[in-house]
Length: 228
Image 1 (cartoon, rainbow, N blue to C red):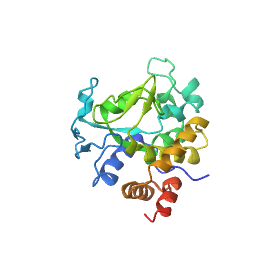
Image 2 (image 1 turned 30 degrees about the vertical axis):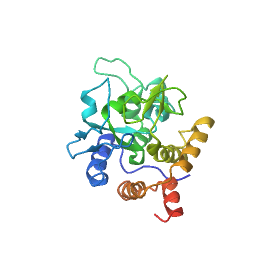
Image 3 (image 1 turned 45 degrees about the horizontal axis):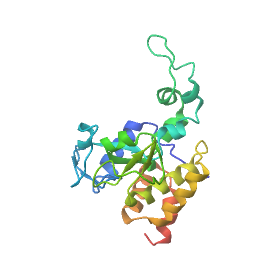
Image 4 (image 1 turned 90 degrees about the horizontal axis):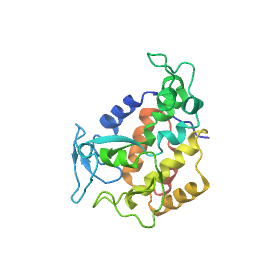
């Protein structure tokens, strides 16, 4: 099994590193291909619409492509809490907040930059922690950005499917705590083949490898196979 992130356990630090040292010359969001500036302000693509979270449509937010909940639930602190997870009033809490507080392995997974991408805030919040799939009847929820969300499932635009697939495969290969369902794994294998790596995806992976200290073996092997 490939090594994961063991260099940075701060999610906030990971976001800042990505913004300043990885995306500084390719400020484009993952799902909708929207451009953004160094202040996180978005240049909304022509035809993009959203009926919810209008203010968040103007800013980028950092998205876990494999949702934190998907791997977080493998940690007992997320599911059941921990003796050290009490607020100032002595009330116990669990979930992400508890896992983040007491489990270093969880913090490393949450901060892994190979799984973090810029997204339009409104798209990120509506995607939520839903699994990706192919939806038969849904239409785009965002106009010209063909991101479809229905019944707690999400179908991303074609251009994003390859990088999404390779991110899911990377997380599964790298962290024993995470396992895809058979159906999800089959879909990701299809998307990986349908949408090959781009020059930018290979460059991004190498940037993160240098900054974080571990190889994304999935992306690396695809880049080598096509000479990138």
